[in-house]
Image (tube, rainbow, N blue to C red; front, side, top):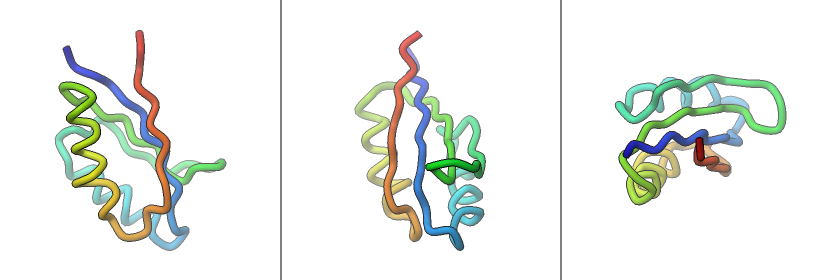
Length: 77
């Protein structure tokens, strides 16, 4: 069963657009948007399972320059 996740990203202000465009290149990313509020970017992911989420974060999100921190919310319905 596929897992949907929303990732809220706090980023360096000068890097927000670049980070969003980089994330859109990944097949797991359903949507990625720059937003206003306490976080700068919201990303919707579709991954096979929770382990895949962890792998995606470690290999594809955290290494991007300008990413300060993330908050992941797993869809439960």
